[in-house]
Image (cartoon, rainbow, N blue to C red; front, side, top):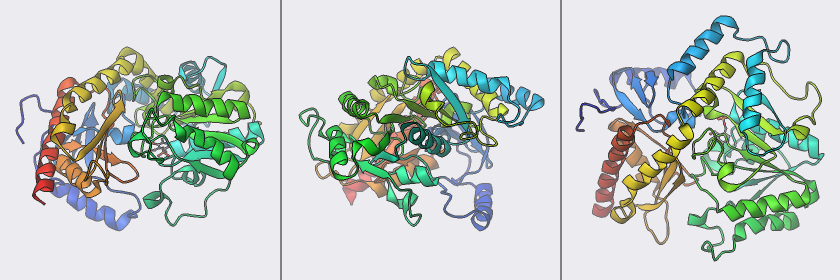
Length: 454
Ligand SMILES: Cc1ncc(COP(=O)(O)O)c(C=O)c1O
């Protein structure tokens, strides 16, 4: 491809290059295939919005380690905080001998999480672990067992999180039996309305389906919590209308059911505000953070109403590594970046730029069925036919492969694998956004030409 002098992309070899290919052979005999391999180029280093591989290729990274690099790869401030902390204390276990940064980070998240009520936070190591703990806490506080989750939801791969996840292949298939007392209802996926209705004439029927769950699946008095991603992540970047949350939260309040907002992918300014809940005026009882919280170090948080969080007794919550000092130091620096680099506003700007660049794509490419999102959480859903909305799964794979060959790393989402999602680090410049989207555009042009010729 044509490179201008200020190109972020530099493709020096075929993709993957020879060194990556050798490493992939080693991987195949040493790592189980169940650990997916989206783009087998082996990374040597990363910086801001770019990653360099072992063959000397430089990629624009619009995937950010699946949404973990909102503050940019290897931000100098985060790296320095990690280095400084590692020289002082790497681990003592907060449950044994605590340290100040854990407490400070908890205070920060309590202050920033949605809801003007007293909150408490504790830390674990992964998004799935945060989900597991949120359900434990909700059950303990309400003394109820049932949890309602949504179609197309993704909450992680551990047993409870997987039970809450709403996609069979590849996540759940063969891994049962799943945890009991999990009930499910449709999400507000307007582009593929489960009731074949159209918003707003639909009257947000899908939210009212919660009453149906109470009638047909489990009585409201047994439900501890509803767990919801404010915008589906793996499910395809699907955002419900605002009234949907008003209805769901109204019903939950009436029945004493807690709301757990899984903001693992949507949080840390991905959609603009610090938490996507703010977009919908939703004040969840518990909110989960992970992914971008610590610049790529493994850390996750459960934040919630203080009286709920204090329900389990000493020893009921925690873990050996949760809230590790190095991860906490990194997270405090990420929060500094949120403020000092104005990541919330930058996310909104990236969203506007994305919309302006892709504005005519629906007219030009019949494959493009829907373009949607908030802030820098944007997606394009590809279909073979605009009327039947047949998912263009293989076309999506081909388009992403073409992007990869040209030095743009993007990944898919969606229950049908036909959604291209943007999870670019929020430190991307306008030029970098434009450069990446032009690569995607070219791949769409070629795929469209192939589709027309077929
Ligand atoms: C919304 C959501 N919840 C939970 C998880 C699980 O997080 P982890 O992979 O850190 O366990 C993910 C990961 O993609 C996610 O997007």
